[in-house]
Length: 116
Length: 113
Image 1 (cartoon, chains in turn purple, green):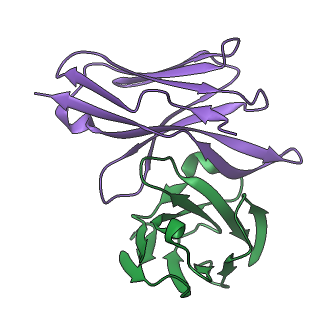
Image 2 (image 1 turned 120 degrees about the horizontal axis):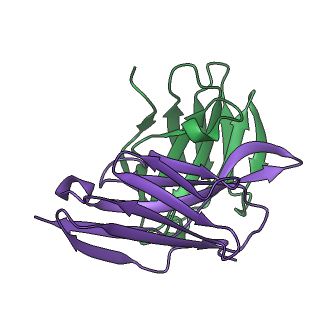
């Protein structure tokens, strides 16, 4: 059961344009979401997060939008830069007995390529 | 601060063998989680260790076991290796409950032949 889905395996954009990466989830118990970026031969690094009490969180060029009714979130990168080329994962932590132990459920990832 | 370090970086094992992967968490972190990332997939949670005990476990068989030492470092052991165990194994460390500050190591690439 894939509770977090990223249906676009890859995305290619031109430098300076907007990149939009999408993520859908099925578990209505998820109340926090994170985006990670992963370069080859490196581990994932935390990028930005959003709580379910918000519908938008912004950090510099990165903005995450959450649509709870649609169980959908998206990551916007504006403007896109060649250094943003990486694999992007959305993830949600699972709670156990009301306490969050940090078990993360990841989507399959989207490979973003930003062309100069 | 060295961050999360994993060893070895690459490993080739034969089907049926056993393997041990190691992880040193970021300084000050007390919780270690292990993930398996198959090619083209997102990381999948294997288990998490806190206070030297397995606190939470994902959907992995008992062939996967672990250990956490008093200095918070951790090992992942896989017995009776299968070809399907070939993957990138990631270790993540954090302070308990502070999942937004989980830091990942670079991973160990395990190939089973």
